[in-house]
Image: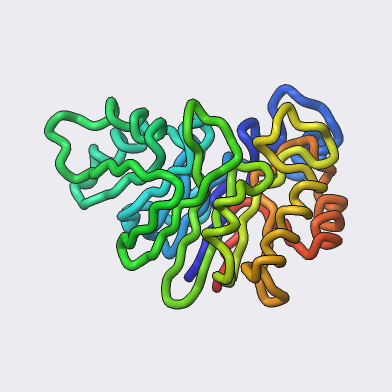
Length: 263
């Protein structure tokens, strides 16, 4: 399994275009821009498709013609820009499944032409388990309010398991129950606010990120061979060198946009 980090940034990315904080200033000076969070698995499974994801694939030298499934976590704009359905319809009639919670799927409907036959929209909810294009997918509840339900995805193929966990705060008990005893090779876990105080419980700080990883270790989902990577990073986080050090202290990694990861 290959996972390409198309974007690793929060909704406003890094840098925020209106901000001059040290993190934004460093990113602007070095060109180390973090775009909206999304990931591409094996060039055929897309995890979230916000406004920047298709262009990020181009920057990585990839195209999305082989994508047959899009898993959408929730309806917020940085994770779902449904205009991709229109752009795709201009050039492709290959089958595509778009899967997500009800508020996200509702946003997609108006972007499908009446004669569109290639795209199937499927609503899922936390607790669902299904197989699509050779991947076993478990839908987990997110601690996040997004015009309704938001979800996380545990994806498995060929004995390898990936957890895509954005946007979310501390685990809901049912999420841990669904993951218990299922070892994860890769955890992509959001950490939006650094040491700042978030406006609610729908995103992680360094402190709650550390607790969330400890929770995964306690149920046997994460062990010494698992890779944990911080994603959905906001500019309340420190500049890059300090960011790397802080994640390393938690047994985790952080990487730039367009980093490929092989499991």
